[in-house]
Image 1 (cartoon, rainbow, N blue to C red):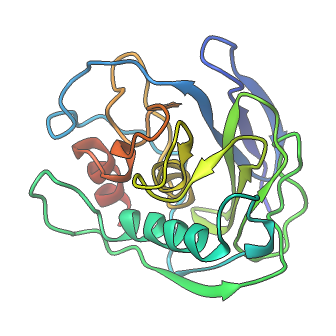
Image 2: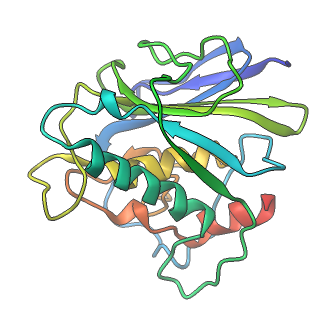
Image 3: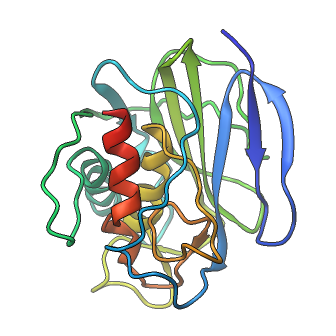
Length: 232
């Protein structure tokens, strides 16, 4: 399996750490995103990390890793919605779903993602897993993708359990929401890269969180959809 760059951004302004490994790790920063910016249905910016899937993505969730204060069912439901937001091109721009990417949730598993607590890719196992776990402070979640040639072969997501999480807006009290965070991470799973926070803060694939209890990133913007359509 070929080597790809790992890009790890610890926080806005902290710089980029680039290492060589057989994967690409893309984190979502904890810092709240900037206000303003081009309206999401008018901003066509996107970037790609390289690679696409040529089959449906089967994945599992380690429900036992769900942190205290949230039920496993609630976390599971939010994560499933996040995957569907990407593969069904969920948006309020009036754009139909022309994205052919597919995901299949294979249920709960004891398997963890191949991502270390420092946020780096670890040896692959050919399975796609989502789990909560320890990550460096300042990072909400990390995605590690691996590919053979131009096709994705594996993708894992690790969600930082050191921060308080909410599964829905209705139950949120100054916490980060799972759905917008994981929608962003699933964008990486399917080949989307980051766009700049300063110019494109309202796109799902912007680098930073939109802030506590903000669900906006669950809804794809024009650029997010353009990127997916270019791949699928």
